[in-house]
Amino acid sequence: MKDRGKRICLSLLVGLALVAAPVDSARGARLKDVVDIEGVRDNPLTGFGLIVGLNGTGDSSAAFTSQSMRMMLKRMGINIEDGISVKNVASVIVTSSLPPFARQGSKLDVTLSSLGDSKSLQGGTLVMTPLKGADGRIYAVAQGAVSIGGFAQDGGGQGVQKNHPTVARISGGATIEREVDFRLNREHSLRLALRNPDFTTANRVVRAINTLLGEPMAKATDSGTVDLTVPQTYRGDVVGFVSRLEALQVEPDQPAHIVVNERTGTIVMGENVRVSTVALSHGNLSIRITDTPVVSQPAPLSDGQTVVANQTEVDVKEQDARLIEMQEGVTLGDLVKGLNGVGVTPRDLISILQAIKAAGALQAELKIL
Image (cartoon, rainbow, N blue to C red):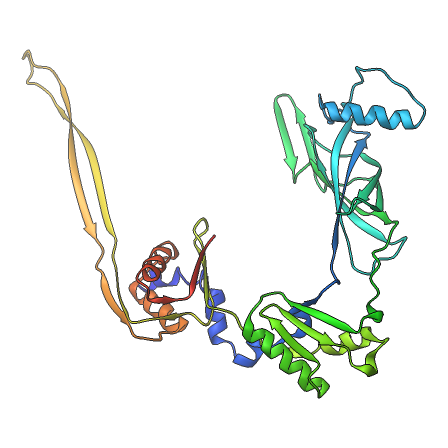
C-alpha cells in the first residue's frame, strides 16, 4: 500500500508545496507581478516574405511563391515570364512583437514560418520584408540570414532531422522604423489591469497603494481594473512613481481550482480546495483470461487423429476497497492524505475527483485540460 501511495506524490507535488510553505512567503507578491499598466504592452507585427538561397528545399509548386518572386524581380527592373522554378525559394510568414516604448533603429527578433511545401529553411536568407501592425501601417523591416537551430537531410530513401526545419529565427533581424506614440510622463492617471481578475485581490491592491501614498488615490472599478490618480508631486515623473509602486507587496487571492491533465495524469490543486462531508470508496477489479493449448493424441496403430484443444482459465481478482469518510471543511492536505491511504494512482484520482464534483461535495472548480 505504501508503494502505491508514493506513485501519486509526483502529480501532487505542487499542491503539497503550497500547503507546507509558510503563508507569508507563499502568498506575498510584488505589485509588478500582479498587474499590468494599460497601454504598456507589446504589439504584434506580421509580414509576408521570401527566403532565397535554399539548396533545393524550397516550395515546389506554390503559385504565390512564383508570383511574389516575379513581382520582386519586376521592382528591380527584371521582367520574367511564367515557368520560373522556385526550388531555392520559400514563402514565409514573418512575425515579431513591438515592445512598449521601442525607438526607431532598435532591433527586434523575428520568427519565420514556412507557408508553402518547403522541406527546410536551412541556409536561406530573408529578403527585405516590411512588418505591419493591426492598423496596416509598417512599423519594422526584417532581413537577414536565418537560423533553424538544427538540420534536415534526406538520401537513399532515408532521412535524419533535428528540431523543426520549416520554422526559423533571425536574432535582431528587424529594424524599427515607426514608434507607437505613447508618452507615459504626460499621463495624470493610470489604469492597472489585474492579470488574474479577483475582487479580493483588487481591493488589496487599492489598500496597499493608498497606504503607501497616505491618501485615497486608487480605486477599484471592477475585479480586474484599478484606476489610479498620479499625485501632484509625481506629475512629469510618472516613471519614478510607477517604479515606487512596483515594489509594493500584495497578497493575491484566487478561487479554488483543481487542474487535471488526463493525457499525462498530472493533477495540481490550489490551497483553498475544500471538500464537504463525503464517503469515498475505491477498488479495482482485475480479470485475466488465459488460453492453454492441450494436445490429445490417439493410441498407437489406431485410426484416431491428433486433436488440439484450448483449455481456458478465468481468474478474477478484486482489490480490497476501503471506505473513507471526509468531514466538512476538509483541506487539501487532508484530502491528499486520505486518497493516499486508499492507494490511488493519479489516473484513479482523476475519476475520484470527477465523482466528488458530481456529488456536489468538491468546493472548487475542476478544470480538465
